[in-house]
Length: 301
Image (cartoon, rainbow, N blue to C red; front, side, top):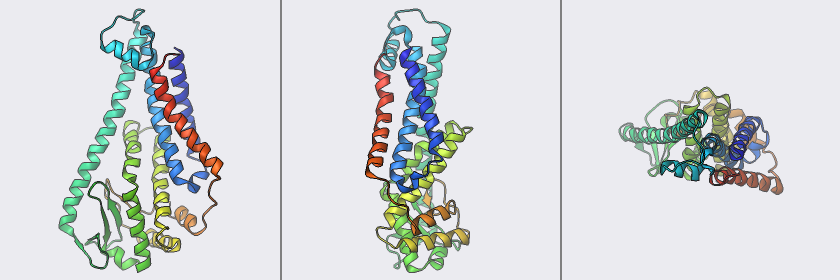
């Protein structure tokens, strides 16, 4: 019972922390660190929520979550008789865990299929351009720039974008898209998209997904400005924002008009970096979150 209460308290703390985290102002100063903390909150919340139900369910075995589930699977006789509440908790916990795993796998499969179809489409409607080596040029008059992530990643720009941007601005945009590819931001977004599928009614989940989408854009901006002028990237973003850019295809990562001014202001007038002690504090919090739920799964309090 104590283990179930501890996991329930941890799940509640993660939910409250996620709600408070959506309004935090420091995240734009350290987007990669904020992404890690968001991932820690999401993983811990999932394990703690399902673990709380399962810990209560296997209480008749007098063991922790994993030992109790193993005993149940092996058909061992519990130390005390089952009652309807424990049976209901077992069904609810296993169902919730199965749903979380299923939506994650489904989201991954759908993303892979969307990218495979899009690569086939690009082979028909895009071409190489000597002016932008290694980049596929899409025959479309609207401005577009995005990447197709994966093992066979591709960076794509439209003919409209080539006409819209100057040479330096185009180099900045390409550096931004290359950053998405290198840092595998598609994998960062995947669990949040899956959680949104599982809980479409949750405002906290929707806000979390929106926050992570903005944070990966900021993280890509930070990597891109190592190779280009931040002002050129800012002006390119403004051009895309005012030109009515083509929507990024499903499953891809690309330039869009959302939160453009927040990114532009950050590029032109960056805030000071977080203090080292604060960074280490958030890293410690992330590690603590990631280890606490698995620890509670294997012990009995």
